[in-house]
Every structure is written in C-alpha cells, then in structure tokens.
Image (cartoon, rainbow, N blue to C red; front, side, top):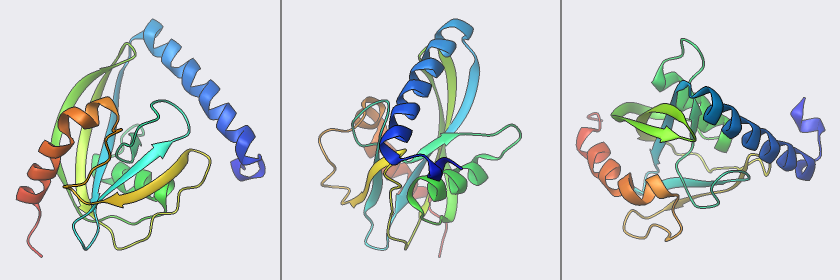
Length: 162
C-alpha cells in the first residue's frame, strides 16, 4: 500500500514518524531489540546504506525485531526490505546494548554474504553501495565510526566454513 504514496511524500511521512518515535522513546524509555546486518559481497566489500530519515551518514542495513522474531530471521527480512538483497551464511557476530533516544536498544550484529546488487527503494533507503573494507566512507553514522572495523574483523574471524 505504501508504494501508492509518491516517494517524496513517503519520505516526509517517514521523517515525521521517526521524530514521533524518538519522542515516544524519550518519554516511555522502552527496551527494544534490533539488528544490523554486516553484508559482504564476493569481493569482500561491505554493504552500507543511507536512510531518508535519522542520521544522514552511511550505516549498516537493519531494523527492529518483531515480537518473537529471531535475530537471523530479522536480519534477512530487513536486508531484503531495505536493499532487495538476500542473505547467505548468516551468523551472529556480537550483541551490544546502546541508548537510543531514551530507549535501551539491544542490537544483534549479524554477518553474512550476498551476491545480489542492492536496489534502494528511494523511500526509506536513498542509497546502497558496497565499499572496500579499507576504503570506507568518512561520513559513517556515529556508532559505525566507533565499531564497524571491529565488527568486520570479528565477522571475518567467525565466518562459517564454506
């Protein structure tokens, strides 16, 4: 149904909804769970996206876990929704707890592979591209600046045997 809304209007609605969600989290201070997906292509490059709302920097695809949803399932779903890519050989790299506008956010970092070409929808995700691990963009979102290189190292060390 959302595809019936013109993309520019949809982006405005997403920004407004995100602002309302941040306000709700500041007031309610809930415990939430999500995932970030560290996706490598066959060349070993990492997939990063830019959202149409929130932080303008590059970040990993991901999102919230639905009630009762497993992190690996959520990671595959979020990756498909945000980029159109499938996820193979998925495994959990680490779990971190971070404050998120008043909420306590438990984030599962899931790593895997994809041979697909990312296709951002132009609504929620404005851009998606693979980057060489030694040539990551300088305008990464805050938590990405602090942890992405460590997550890449851990993901490579923990990857399942092929």
